[in-house]
Length: 582
Image 1 (spheres, rainbow, N blue to C red):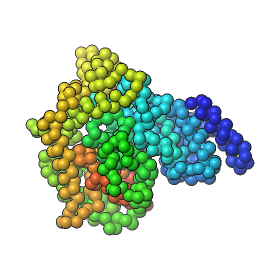
Image 2: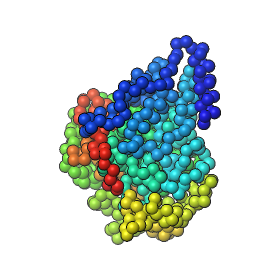
Image 3: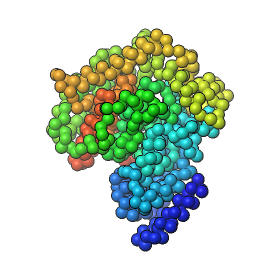
Image 4: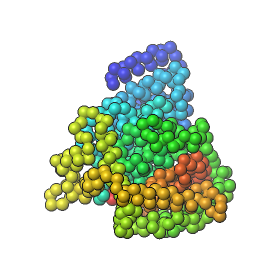
């Protein structure tokens, strides 16, 4: 790393010597303390973020960073430096970053040199980002899914999405914390906790669920410790942390973004999504990372279904809402939202209608009475009803057994090759990895039920029996048909379904269908201070519609100056360190 940094710095210095109008400061003047002052408790000023070499980095968009670099006001190296300072300022409180990339400054210096020599790769050139620790990076960082069992393993290559972003000029800053094994290992756990990384906490309230399993990705972007981040979702793990941290989150159609190089759960539902503070930022990231990858045959399905020129061309303004018609699946999802949330979401819906949109109530998911759990998120709801052959969990736990063995077959420098090996490691290292349930002096409070998820998967031995195939058919096709039917009203196609993503059954139905969702900030729970969002649901490969309508709603939020929009953290209970957080 140091050799690459030295070469990059030398070349950059030589180029600068030939340009008398270009100077760079590498020492950031520190105007205020990095320590939180109690007098500022209860506001975003508790952790004030200084300007970055004169540039206002707090809440800065990718376009603003890009314009500043183009004008010579700031460099990529300086952006990395300032995000490092912000991370150092907040890490002891949020723990959003699991590992810093030791090559980050070298990469940033290379991007600065390219810019100076007239090569700008695109809108992400020089922009720092993080990825969830279950996304492989072939560099000096670990890829462990938060588990101590995978420490030291060497991946064969960058995950496809990481390579795409590197090629786009983005600067990989580090690995974000997560719920260990993306919540697959345990069914009663502390969201955002991993044996390797510890507990991730939200800047909005450090004592409650920060959203997961892509916890560090959501928390980091929301607290302005990074420009954007990648996460993964099998069932809610992008949409949930995005909306709980007042962010835009895009969960793509299964097959739009490659899963090659991602620690898997289920080939049928896994997808890679992104977190950003604006719809445009998230869309720029999506444009850079999607594409066909021969190592993930699911991506072949996108051929002929993605727009030439990407998704950014569909970004629009509030004026587009004059011709929009949205559906409300009231009995399917909205009925489960609490009164505080409904009051605020109704305020946002009224604003959308005032802009000219038509909103139709009771556009229900077909067979929602059977598909949707009335008691909150439950991926074994079919078994609860007495029908394991109608349960999402029946195929997820089989897929995991097989998929993790395939993934581990490609990594080197480790003896961990199977789920059996992982389970044994957790038993042998019970004090740190909580292999046993937390009781009678055994286990770990963050993994209250031990590794019951792993044990359920282990019991299947990866056998795809009749129950597996029936459950897969029931959940996937049932949810696809249910969403497609709800998107049709009196013979006409709706522009999208508006759903409350804090009602976890909504992203769960989209997850089982493999369909895309986007969430935008909408409000804040008055009791906890935790944000929630308003989400749009669509059919397969309809990300263009999601981008269009989410950007229109966001533009309306900004221009109307409504209170129903992105909020800044209040850092509630910033000195509390409870585990578990639920």
